[in-house]
Length: 398
Picture 1 (cartoon, rainbow, N blue to C red):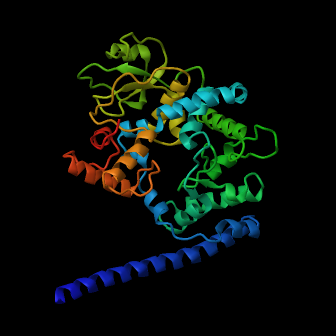
Picture 2: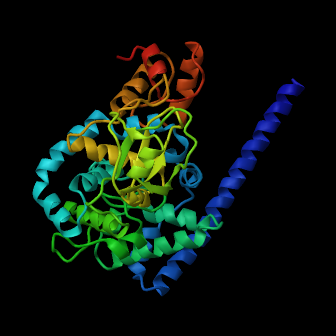
Picture 3: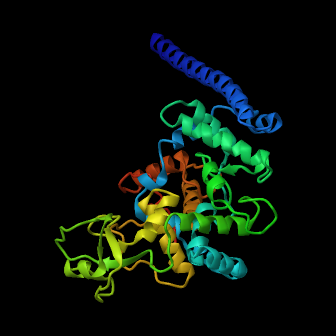
């Protein structure tokens, strides 16, 4: 009996400590948000807009957690690519390529950026405008600004810029739905990037990346042009690397194709390399996976999101909506990742097999990962929590 009382007391004390910490965080952010409103007004934001965009901002644990954990850096690349470049996204991209053919052609002509690449950015960033994020970005940015740390000043600047954009009437205050980091719109621009590179392509007097497809596509092309994209060169070439290769590697360690040929590299189909195109070698999954010679155009893709996996997702999707081939070399895994449709089906299968994930939505969060771990353990699979092929098949996937 004493043990139960002692345990209950420990749990009660822990809950009280947690509740106290939550209350302290809520009080702290309330004070901080009040100060942010004052700073925004002093910077030229109308008091009405400041109040409208920041009233109700509360501590958001998810924002803070996401700020230290990003999928493109932690997810195996074969999972990342399977999710982002799936059959549905390719099919939708091809349909939208036709639907917006006139706009995309005009954008390519004005900015000199391949229309398929612009379309791919749109597809990866918001599923062609269908999903723009889970966060009201002014509240997310307020959390990041109030959390302190090295980047607090940066996020405060992005927040005030967000409110200035709304004050100027370019984007409605309620239109700022996007990422935990403050990016918004159909092609997910950070506010200061919007100020620098967003364009009014439909001629209505507003640079509206939320409601205007022409503005979003043209702004993306302008971004990539500014980052150094040139239609005179490809983003990269898939290659074969000779066994035992120990030469230069890395996207910035460039040499011309003739030099790479002398180092023993060939195109993936075995054909030779030659010419003066400057490229660097990347092997995103190590020496046993696909290899690419990438140009400065790949750097332009990475500038949108500083991740090698992200750049390759844009590159691959752009090739596939154009009617090109997928990467030829396989990823070095015997347990491939799942498409979005398969992830949704996996959640249904987990529920049917007694591993509760709640209402299936295709998003793999902590509850789904925990359920996957339980299913993997039951079926004698390595416990990873990954939404992958082996556990999917073990549960009855097709």
